[in-house]
Length: 155
Length: 261
Image (cartoon, rainbow over all chains, first blue to last red):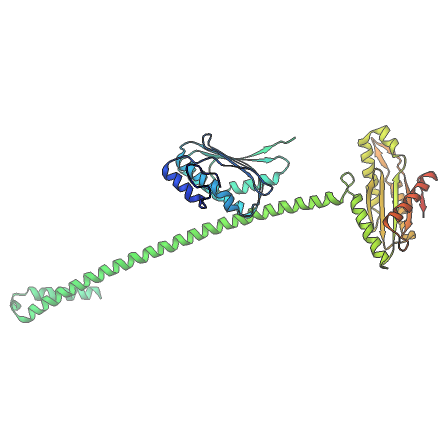
């Protein structure tokens, strides 16, 4: 884990503790830039731009381990950044634990939205695969923050 | 009860106030007893208040458990619903992949790879003494002319038409697929030369009854056939070679006919 700078030992096992430390110190968290694999999506964050990008398939062996840094990043951002947050998702297949994590993530956004913070989500999908849009609709059901499902025409 | 007690309490209070009993030892004792009684009553009221508050808190805690439980149940149901949809999506994708692995994209018939595997299976069964099978190879006559005069799109449409007429009259367990180009392979499990010839006759009849129509004009399409049946101990290559040779002879015999080997 090398997502956390600022003298955090690289081998520190509890990323959530590291995040809490950073939060206490009032320092913005280092951005994430996790490369996609065949079973996990690309995860990228940009604190200055207020942007999170997730793209690809998600059926990792341990979804909680993979996504915890992202959940920590988002909660730190929402707590401290004081500026809008935008999520751009191009997710195709999600396994059950990834679905669970997305719902937790959207819950965080919902809470922030209810507290008057500016959050929005854009879910991009290949226009040839309408099923992905149906799934995004299911996710959107309980969300009141801006949640757009956008078809992309691909060559 | 409480009214009786209030009545009694008033009586006691009046007795204690009554001047005629002042200084009497029993008046003194009654006063002390009454003070103790008041004290106990107040304590009882306090205990009851605490117990009530505690009960209320427990009740609220229970309610919040119920709420949390219901919320988690809803979340769980949603996860399951979404997960099922993803599974369904994968299943359909898988079926699509299986279909493209075994079927010809243009005609929707089985493809060469699938036919080759099935031919191998039938050959294995027959070699072990479990039945017999016949094989036919069909080729669209003068297909190049159709392509050249009408273009490839019409050529493709003609192939699809032929494919439908080939598949329609076959029995459920007969197989038919596109071997390549304008060549089709027919497999008759359990059948002999006679059965194959009958099947082919039905196909030729159907192709006459339902000719290919392009731009409102009937374009006569015919097929040449080579037919053979399994011979004990032979290989896939050997039987394919023989059926191909029979087809070649049919072509040379003037097309639109059937040659047996």
